[in-house]
Image (cartoon, rainbow, N blue to C red):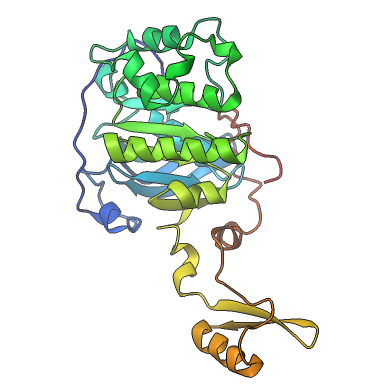
Amino acid sequence: MCGPEGRDVMGDWLPVTSTTAAHRGVRPHPGEPLDPDAAISVRGLVKRYGAATAVDGLDLDIRRGEIFALLGPNGAGKTTTVEICEGYRNRDAGEVRVLGEDPASAGRRWKAQLGIVLQSGAGDSQLTVRELVRAQASYYPDARDADEVLELVGLTEKARARGRTLSGGQRRRLDVALGIVGRPALLFLDEPTTGFDPEARRQFWSLIRSLRDDLGTTMLLTTHYLDEAEALADRVGVIARGRLAEVAVPSALGGRGSAPAVVTWREDGVRRERATATPTALVRELAERFGGEVPELAVARPTLEDVYLRMIGKRPEAADDAGARDEREDPAW
């Protein structure tokens, strides 16, 4: 989809540059000024729904040209944060700049620089795929050619098919086609692969990477799939209780890169394990002890899911996204 209002927009491409805290891969310090070069820069963001505080003083920078994954349980505040950045929802306090402008007052030219892919799209339409993309393109003075976009998202063979006949994976590709036809500098992806089978998810991941690598599109991704965040995101941010707990590359989040490894093996019919900062030395010791192969040997460090669950702790109950649009998030979370 296009901007938050979905119609009557126009705009231009913006360059990819940043040399500030967001570029260095760390979150901003409290009181640090907004980053003028970031795609999204947020300071002290607050949003309340009655007595519930959904976002409580959040600070965040997302650099241009990166894929940034925003993680958090239901009620953590991520939907509200994203909606404020889209210009869809007003804030109660704080400063927000998206592509250099305040979403609360930005106009049509700014809206044209956004692409928004919601969880539900135009898949049930009686129009053909090409007709849907051309209709969306008509809102923009400098839209991409519809057939070029369909080729980019892998739907050329479905150009004459009606939207309602597409599979789930094809519908999501159509949603992305509608989101990028206006040449957005910033693309919001809301739970893009919910309900996908493994093969369809990996195909979709390849599409998202190509948009970043070939077009330089900045993307803000919300997902409950930790493997998806690890596969796609240049950096991830974890929201808990309305605040940003940490921002890091996936491999370093929560100290993963320096955490002790857990070595497991079977000895005397018993499964044994040991946490160690020097797993190579321990494996060498075990190999010598067993005279070669170590039975059922495995070496593992904490997964992204391990550190994520530790960081969010108990699910927040007070900071519910109670006025936000339905995220259709997995109730298992």
